[in-house]
Image (tube, rainbow, N blue to C red; front, side, top):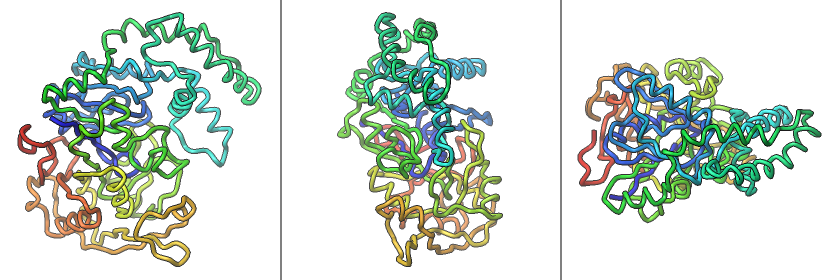
Length: 435
């Protein structure tokens, strides 16, 4: 069987965890290929809510092996806190596997993240302060510490010293902080080694062997398309590539083995943190979407900025990622809105654009051009088929599909795993019919 990639099509929080969990019941491996504990998933199973941060959503599946890929940055303290919390609720985490090549988030990365944001003042990016950016900086700068380094104390000590040589100068002389002790950091990291060891494997070989055997590998990208360091609203982005191409790099699975790329799209738009947001609402409708949709960041606890659906963003995300299918989430949140605005263009300096502007300046100054569609008042949370939806809801979905240029294969009509309408099968044959 080929591999499948799940990607957020907006700024994150689209419901990737639910979609991954839904498919995770019917796949063999669920891989997190990028990001760290800065991007959470909320998954509701059997009425229970699980908030996952570093672990793949597939950890909740009884059938799938959850995998943290080489492209992830791992905070070991956060990892084991999350594992312990799940185990206390009866979740089996024994199948978790972690790439030996994944990089480690050290305590000094978090320190630098926080002091750097404060130093930037009004130019702050709005990071989570969890050290993700500084860890990726060390990775690219070849000063990083990988999971495999924890199993060689001598190598680990050398790498920590090398990483801290410049950082301590920065902390002491620029940020007026005390220097970080290399021995203290080394001992702290080594304390996790034995518990970590049984989980660590060459995940690239494991995943490719699984594909060779006909097993299904699902890759769930953290964050989303417009937080991608290359394709997002730079510099208000994450430090990795949460697009479909990044999933291949972060897992070691080649692109020719990918059969489906599934984009997760919210029926409106949300964003956490700073950066431009053309359809953002500052009125009672923004408050309605925030309250009705429960729009609060899983990791940060910050209210998400809310706005109407932006079709230009989605169409561009389809291009970047090569989506074969879209899963539309939170359609039920729009119930009760008499007329639903839908962004179909941007006006920039008197000119209307129907594609994403080339420059950040143009995007920052873009004013949304809307069309409106009749809404619905009927409760749709019990809908089992597309035909069960009110006609106006069906029309809204069809219009989004037309504007995206990609089929909408599943529709979320409630928070639970079961509250999903399957329009087209998301898994290729012979795995089975859609759930």
